[in-house]
Image: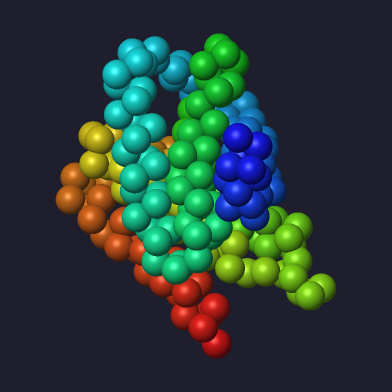
Length: 191
């Protein structure tokens, strides 16, 4: 029994540190919502079936984008980031007066990608594969949000806290962008 746990941990371990950093960054980033000059929108309760569909959708879209890295650990990182970005809902769910979804931002993807790249240096140099994977994770998350009918996204937070409206079919372009970001990682790995 413990041998199989050890094998699973060997697969999951390389993805653990970047995902913990990403989760903490999403929680900290959500605090930018305290700067909101408008009345905050509070978190609505999800029923268990709706929550399962939401989680499954983000995992599926994140893994689809992550597969294009051709690296199992980076695919897990992209999948996890696509799901963990929703940690920015937590302060709103706890009734703090913050705007929700502020980590649903291009700048959040850039920020966390750079932080993770420097935190997990390889051979003394930043590992910028994590930058592309973080951007891919954000785009795949946004893609599923648009597909699920939630196309109002604050993609420029914290510099602009307003939301932009994405047309329904833009989910395809967002997922293609996520796949291309990760394909760039795969091409870099082959050099």
